[in-house]
Image (cartoon, rainbow, N blue to C red; front, side):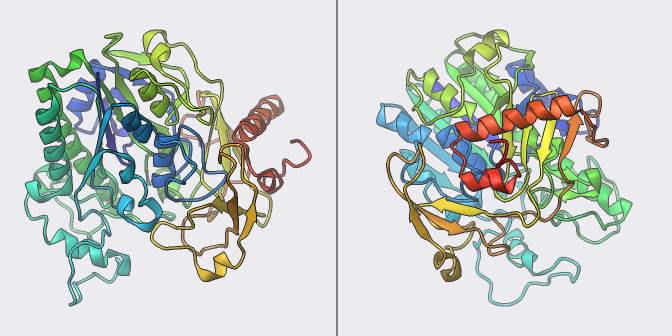
Length: 489
């Protein structure tokens, strides 16, 4: 048996044809939907990028215990478990966060791995002289503008290289058995840089300043600039769709559908001006960012071109893959095998928890979403870890001076952890920059979350569900205090 997980970062569900979008050009995502199960109610869990990827290894929420960080020594890693049980695992990615301090333990969990350099602010090509950075962009653009000088043709772009490497691996190993390919594209994550032939599909002329990398903040740009950014995202999305089509052609030509599971997924979406906001992380996790697309082809059932409404999450993917290869999940994994959801839409959960360390904690039943604000001061708040790294740095000396050893949690296998004060604005990993207050939305009546509702009975139900899921996750005691639950829990 074989399995491929093809991941696109920042893939907006509402921008894809299979989910009803009528203006983006994504015929190959539609073609994928016609040869797979489309999940209509899939939600992220731990957010954003690396916390979501830790879930794909461990099958459990991690955002209540620490911010962005690596695989911990006590973590159960799905690809490592496969490797230890005779399934060859290979990873291909241009997601530069894997090669930074806060992600550096992920790729070594595979038998082999390949990287493609140059995305976003990847510290790739060296240039001592200062590139011309337009004043309105800011210094964060420096490295990206250096890197872009080397992407003059489509085949130079990391997306094209990632697909070339993936196709090379599949071609070499298509006649072998027992392998898992984790094939991951950073695109269509910002910056929305692509070639002119894709841009011209959406925009014939634009005379404003360069703008394909929105800051994580409120919209201050003109309507024309907002439309331009959306068009830039759409252009990059269509490039992703084009390469997806080349892969689907190969699946057809080689008839790999007969014995190869295919999962196409993402970590989160992106706000493109909705709610007058850009991006993610600095805002509440609205449906545009956390209600995500998921497609699965399971050759055991052979069911395709159907939708499933059951509530699922990213933590279900590693459990599904382990079962597919005949292995059992560990006792610390919280996800569920999706085989019966695929076969007959059999539910695996009633509620789903999601959030980002230090921000709101949220719960949904797929029809309503309850977004719980922390108490004033947003504390107490700690990082619990054996690996004190942020996204691009080690924990600071000031942070480490607050560290104390604690016995650990139910999932740390009897090992102690450092309990470190989550200092404000030390790294960008922990954030509570924007808030609505505690709110409840009816997603069926108000899918764009424009009008919070008052429903004491539903709020009480979702509060209880949130507390139950936090207890199941063995959340630190101060999280209940931080959320004002200490009298309810």
